[in-house]
Length: 592
Image (cartoon, rainbow, N blue to C red; front, side, top):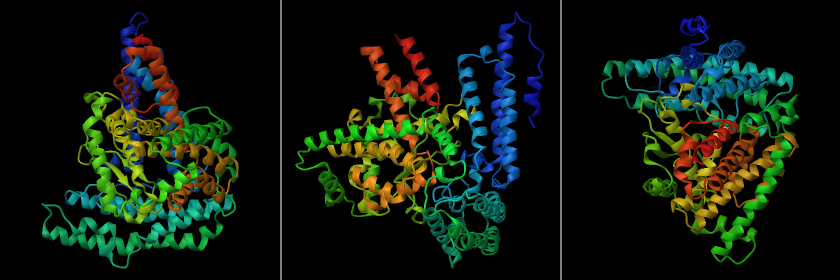
């Protein structure tokens, strides 16, 4: 139910018709209350969201988010707040509020549309595996704090609930088997391997025990003994048996029933419509599957022409295929150790930090710091090359660029520039951390995550290396290869999920068009299988942002300031691409 604050505002007596200011104030107050109440209601319904935002009032709660009851409560939540929104006349709002109104309506409508598809029947894949998330939270290196006795008690309360969620996942997967909605077998074999990594014989080796091995100051010896005993009991009698139960279920029931002849959701009941929705969900555009596929083919051809220019610059004599082999296999492009790779990335990031004012106003940079860390061993085989985790709101945890150092020959040195610019600066860290610090925005915008905008910005950032003065020829080549990857994603994601491509066809297309090792081809192909449509957001978003910059440069001529353009792109947080376009067009009109 809506709180009395929202209900009270919505029940306000209408202001006199000649009191436009009063009407605007009432509309603005109702809108702000709606956003605030929605944020609180969503965190109460899904408390881990609050934990990852650095808000700790729900740190002891772990409701069953996989249950039918939860899905119904989430649907009612979306419908209820959309109904409140319908009571507000957007014409009464100022420009900022009207923008928030439009974004909020868009997101609520898309959430309701998403619920029409049976994603709950496939609750696990190698990228979204809650058994890994719980282990990372329990390790003390993620969002769950372990600063005092209460924090330890909070996490113990959450651990007690883990079996309930695991059993609900099993229930949903059984229903998926009955309905013919299952994951590809190869993905679930990866999941099983991940779970197996947590089934340790020695509890002291478990990630869940790390906070017990290193208590913070202020925890008494008696509490340390008591908490250690409680954690050992919870692990041995509750958590690990539930993990084992899930492992056994996958091996005995689910993996034998999972898909082997098809890899895309287009082959599932209602799968073609489901995938078309996901294309629109992830790109925030009305593009069709065919349009996306054709854009991908054209971009692959364009980028390969740009790579030829780099080959000419470094005076490479031979075919592009030979250049791919050279840059993939020559020892000069290989790291000798994981630590060398990590330090090289850190040094490159420091170089970018030193020159960021060339493209960004200093006051537009986030206050939060960031770190570069290695991906944990238990998930590195299936993890992408890099990922970003936002800083906590309270400043206790920095932004984190997780760097995958698995299989060093597949992680060439020339990849560091584009990957750092994308995941850290000026990519995800600048955008996500800054958005979180825009305290004048309602929470749903500060913590919103529109993939096409966020990943589009990340990929656009990769193109800024030359303007920042941090790229050499091979860094530029690395950026082109990274962009080529995103163009290839348009082709193969649509190929898998709409055109029935096999896993091998995807791997062959990648091998024929980009210089990547087998390990990365496999992890990327399996990523596309697990996250239908998500990989489309990068290139579609980047093309959109770049086209807006081109439009602004053409319209403003010598009056164009790239720093101001970046301010305009970043100042409102993540936006659906159509709304971003309207905002940039309005700025261009004001500047002319």
